[in-house]
Every structure is written in C-alpha cells, then in structure tokens.
Length: 106
Image 1 (tube, helix red, strand yellow):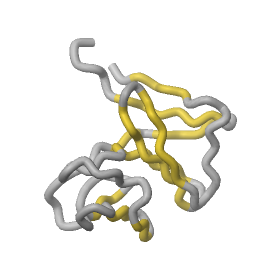
Image 2 (image 1 turned 90 degrees about the vertical axis):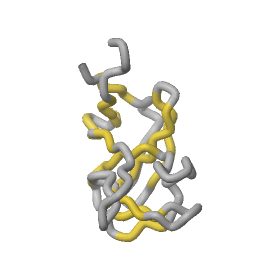
Image 3 (image 1 turned 180 degrees about the vertical axis):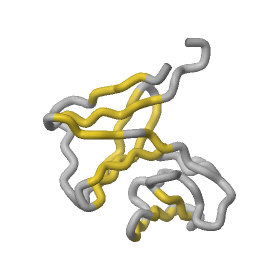
Image 4 (image 1 turned 45 degrees about the vertical axis):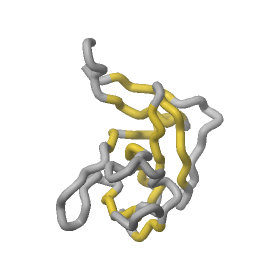
C-alpha cells in the first residue's frame, strides 16, 4: 500500500521554484511549474547525478552530468529509454504531500 508523506509546513514552493527534499532516505526533486507541483527521484537513472538543478525547459529536466532529459510529469525520456521514478504530489492547505510506493516487505 502506498504512503502519503506530509512535508513540514516550513517547506513551501512558489511557482517557478524547485528544491530537493529528503523523504525516508530518498532525495526527491520538487518542481512548481505554473502552479502545479511535480515530484521526481532526484537521482538520474543513468549514473545517479542530481536532476533538480539541471536545465528545465517546459516540463523537461536535463541532467547536468550527461545531458539526459526526463519529463518531470512521467519520468520518461522524450525518445524512450531510461525512466526516473515520479511520485504523486499535492499541496493541501499549504502542506505539501508526496505519495510513495509501498516499501519492500510491507
């Protein structure tokens, strides 16, 4: 069963902003694109480099290490190939909540 993780109320994300949050041992990159929140695993599936602060064009983030691009909505590369894990995210009454998949063995 999935788990909803509520971030501390001090974590806010204005439109156009991005940041990395640590959630249960994971680094997750959060993006606010035109008022909609997106959450993607911050580790590039190619070699683990951070995705958060790469070049962002529309909904595509480019890994600064090797240039691979991923859609922050789907985690997919534009032409297929590797996929970064994405997570449902929402902001309810000012609190950002990320839904994580079930842990192994739960």
